[in-house]
Image 1 (cartoon, one colour):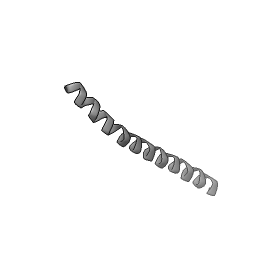
Image 2 (cartoon, rainbow, N blue to C red):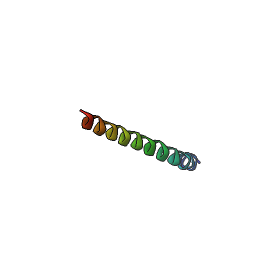
Image 3 (cartoon, rainbow, N blue to C red):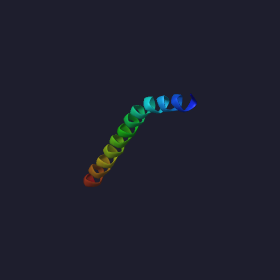
Image 4 (cartoon, one colour):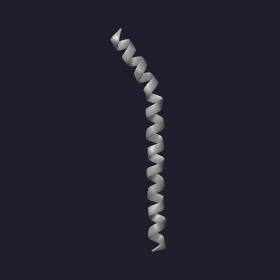
Length: 42
């Protein structure tokens, strides 16, 4: 019973984690790109 409930909770959380990690990855990538453009300006 407990294991089944745990796996269902994990199945619901997985897409959420993917969304969070992907958005975090894009923001990091944007920050790196901004830093490169700042270096170019200087």
